[in-house]
Image (tube, rainbow, N blue to C red; front, top):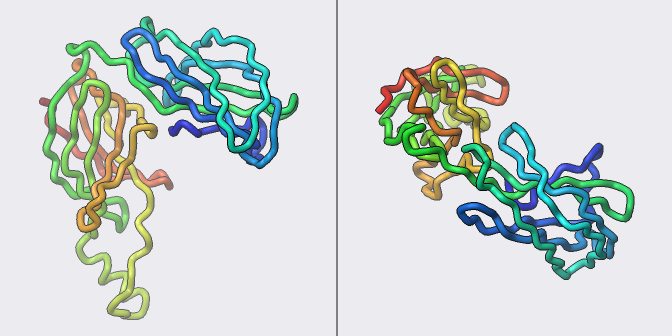
Length: 253
């Protein structure tokens, strides 16, 4: 979720004000500023209504003390509103800074920052790399899962789309035998990791990412780390339609 992510409360109206959340991470705090600017070519009066640190993708929110701010913002000119939040006693997890502003005394908008992590103790999560090299199939779609990287703050599945043998030929026959018939465009997909029967929470803020190598389009699905207490780990591929591949069991390091 990027620095400019926003949710317009109760509407899909394009916001007249842009807000970017910039901060630096320190051991016990994050310090930064909200960068405000008129986005529609007009000046606006804004009021900072609330600031929170929220767990992602879901979870509790913690209010951050913030001064009452009521200012005017202009197009083409950045206005900086500083903030500081304590993170010393946050449980391990991923978080973002969420802010709410009211524009011209009327409509309210919410914005989210890039995500940051509070690390787990070293003994609480598994570390290492699991080589998979398996072709997982969802309908006529194939996905080559290459490896799973177990990190201290996240688990990353590295995979790429791969054609299932015989599917292109079958599609061509269905379409009338066209030799150069193309398969439908590759739909979005993601890897789901299941530890002891529970899916690890995904981290859209950290992925998926696509490699710059066009001949080998690596993609990455990122989730919360694997607990050291996990006795089993499996992986499956899922489409937005809800269709999933059969799971493949992984050997824990």
